[in-house]
Length: 96
Image (cartoon, rainbow, N blue to C red):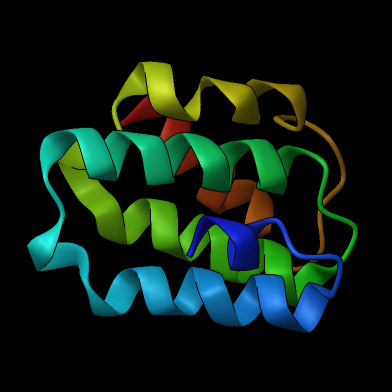
């Protein structure tokens, strides 16, 4: 899954992020935090709007597993112009 989350193809990254949400109930705390961190790092440098939305949605779906430390990488894009309402996603992740 990690390889797909950081794949060269934005389509593959978006699909992998969507797949993270399919298994949310089966992750351990460590798995969830690791996935949240990987998703946050990839989102912080994502250039594709669809992949970014999938990454942010996956972080939100991870819920409490996506602790503040894991998602702190999103601070790099907080306040930046993002497509659609994705700025709201970033705000919600960082400030809830």
